[in-house]
Image (cartoon, rainbow, N blue to C red; front, side, top):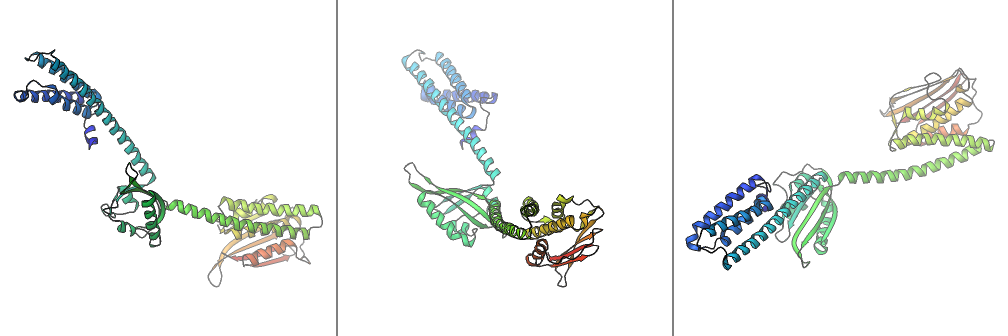
Amino acid sequence: MLTRYTKLVPANSSLAYVITTVMVLVGIGVRMALQPFLGDNLLDITLYPIVLMAAVLGGAGAGMFALLLGATVAILFLAYSDTPLFAASTLADLGLYFFGARLSVLVASALRGTVERLEVAQEKLVAALEASGTGTWRWNIREDCIEWDPALVHLFRLIPDQEPRRGEAFLHLVHPEDRAHVRATIRDAKLHGSADYEFRAVLPDGAVRWMYARCRMIRDPKKHPHSLMVGACLDITERKQVQERQNLLVHELNHRVKNTLSVVQSLAVQTLRGSTSLEAFKEAFQARLLALSATHNILTQELWESASMREILCAELEPYGGIDERRVCAVGDSIRLTPQQALTFGMAFHELATNAVKYGALSAPQGSVDIAWRTERDPAGKPVLKVDWVEKNGPLVREPTRKGFGSRLIERGIRNELEGSLDMCFHAEGLRCSFAVPL
């Protein structure tokens, strides 16, 4: 209520002094009109409320102006009346007026300053609540009456004036599986004074949103709880989704780390078996670890969701000159691979590229490799990724008498891990490797 009066007139402005002058003159005029009934007692009757009103409406400066102006007029009035100006009663009356009016100015200005600071704090609070999307509520437990602010109504996507007015009406907005939890938390808050909790809210449009609420009981100076509870509510759906995503990524990371360690262990054992010397083992094992790391780097950049087919090819062929579109050409659709597909394809391309550099087309100056991939439909109508690795103009190729670790690694990855098909043909003019995997 006081706020509306302190905002009527700017503090200590010209308008405040004009209004103060008018109020003092009116007050003295009223007092003079009451002279036949009240006698010469002028100051104590009309000037106190005038000074107080001036300080409230116009600030401390206006209050002091009213005090001095009223005293001046009063002294002039006494000087032209039959009342002795320097009589003990008159001086006592003036002293009492100055003391009481000054005290009124101090109290009124302090009250006005408190109201102004309260207004600033309230504006900051409203701004903070709006910025955070927080809504507040107030619950009279004894009368079971709930009051929501507009921000909370908007948070629950309700129509204004249709927010719940009773506790049970609010519980209808809570997900059925969370109602018992909310009831228990409210009971604890009544006993212990405060509580915070999370629950799912079912909005009018059927959407389910996660809410965080904090409430506390209002207590009197003797620490006895009143039947009044206040609280705030915030939509934390996005935060919950981030937490779920982080948990999923942690589980996925644990799974990937275990798989990677298994792959590294297998690479070490199989590479050691196929190596003729420790130096040969070191070279081959290090190259395979780098190939695995290249694919991991791409997947990490994509948050282990997927990887581009062309990115995997570029990463695995980079140590051998990359895709220069002369000796190595790569053409295909824009395809995203799952993490498992990307890791398997990465190791397969590494083994093929290593073999081409050591024994195949890339070991000869005029040799080249054509890589092509495309998506087709199998007889059941499901998408299938088909990849062709074709080497040309290299040295004469003969089919090996036994499969090396590289061939077994490709075969195990394509057929066993990706449930695809593999066709590796050692033509005299160059190796041709074709494989197809379901997408």
